[in-house]
Length: 98
Figure 1 (cartoon, rainbow, N blue to C red):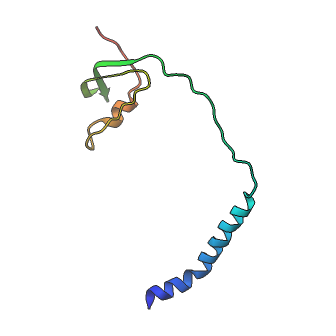
Figure 2 (cartoon, rainbow, N blue to C red; figure 1 turned 90 degrees about the vertical axis):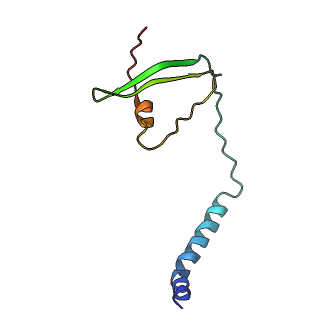
């Protein structure tokens, strides 16, 4: 009987939710569709990272990271917990060595 009693107890809230959804639907009847669009520039340039090391707290967190991206490409960073994914993403200062 407990599930039935819970349903009966929640009936008022279900009715109010249904009425609210209907009221929202009525508010938007005949309203013009709002479309926000803007042109994005075409991707330009490429990114090349070779043998990157990330230093955190005075110690090397990750070393030897290499990847390249052509214009318009994406990179996903995946790995187990503690693999320094977030550390790599948050790395800001870049020092180039030859």
